[in-house]
Length: 147
Image 1 (cartoon, rainbow, N blue to C red):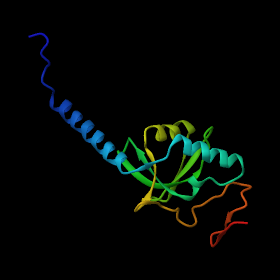
Image 2 (image 1 turned 135 degrees about the horizontal axis):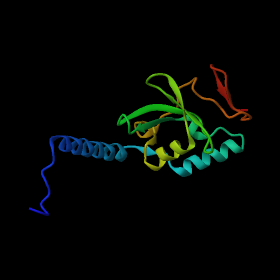
Image 3 (image 1 turned 30 degrees about the horizontal axis):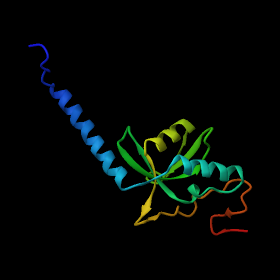
C-alpha cells in the first residue's frame, strides 16, 4: 500500500546504527572538553601580529577527525588564519599542515579542544614550543626564559 514506508535493509540498519553511535560519541566527547573558540584563534592571531607567542602554542590540544571518529593528542606549532597552520600529533610524533579553512571547520564543529590534565589545561611538553619570530621569549632545548 502507498504511504507505508518499506522496512530498512540490513545495510541501512547497520549504517543508521553507526550514525547513531557516532552522534552519541560526539555528544559525550563534547560534554567533557574545553573547546577552542573562534575568539581564541583571533586572540592568537593578534598576538602573532604583535610579535608575541600566542597562548595556544603553550598548551596541548586534542583534534577530532571525522574520518577516523577519533580524538588525537597534539599541539599547535604554527597558527595562520589566512594560510596553513601546523599541528604536531603526540601519538606518532608527526606534524601536519592544515589549511585555514580546515582549522576554522574544526573550531566551528567543536573538533579542536584544549587537552585537560584534571581540571587544568595541560601544558605543552618541553621541546615542542616554537615562539614567534621576534618574540623576546626563546627556547633552546634546555631552558625557557623571558627577557
